[in-house]
Length: 386
Ligand SMILES: [Zn+2]
Image (cartoon, rainbow, N blue to C red):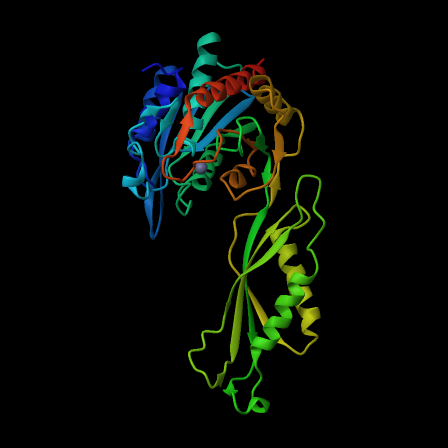
């Protein structure tokens, strides 16, 4: 196959049925593309009790800096209702100028383009970068993501690998190729608020203490004031209650306990710890010593992060603008991604395809987008090593 052709690369990748946690032949394919070019390819099996083993891949060419890493995942979500697809989900059929298949945009397409761009750059520069290029590819992003990027980064750190910059090839664009580069994400924190009262007969409320009333007071208080006003790169933090539970199956019983669950998407005014403290303080103030409550916080590895705009984001944005004619927004919106792990090792931006059909039936990508994204990556690489 022509490895500088992103369309051929993507077709081959889509035909690997790599639904998490199956490798499906996708990493082997990358191995066969990169090894002949001199990349040192390592297949890293990650294990954790109670979870399926997952294979990951790390491939590096060069030993010097600067070191540009392309990151991504070859695992895909299940196809859902296969009969609803107009082309089989692992066929890579092209129709109407679009290639169909699970993973077309999320995110085998991004990987296919990055591989094509890197190989094209190497072909024009005597097979060696003026520094190092690596691929950090996981097979566990769409699942619970414990055997993917975090373990692979730990493995590279133990080997003394150092990265200068990373491009995560996730589908970052909203509507048009070139509209969005993601430079960070809000953090995410899940909590439970538990109010304790005194259980009793509904006909004798004076002998009981209904925790529902107190829970309503605290819920109202926690939603009353904004958590902040937003920051240079982020929208205001937001707390949303997602469930209120008493679990009372009886009509004549005042319950002894009431619970509410909530999620907070937070910006760089907070850390996980400072945010917990803030919520606990606001609840304590509203309780005024009259309500018995506790918080239970779920463990979170989704802290807030941002790659501050600077020469690297400028370089990426300029390449995007040249190829697409669009000035990309530097965004911190959306759900979490593996960038939250990579940010602890080097500055990371996310730029890939348009995300509209990701995880959907008939996931597909315009062939023209594959060619344009490859050109964008190629320009980024050329300038990075100029
Ligand atoms: Zn993805």
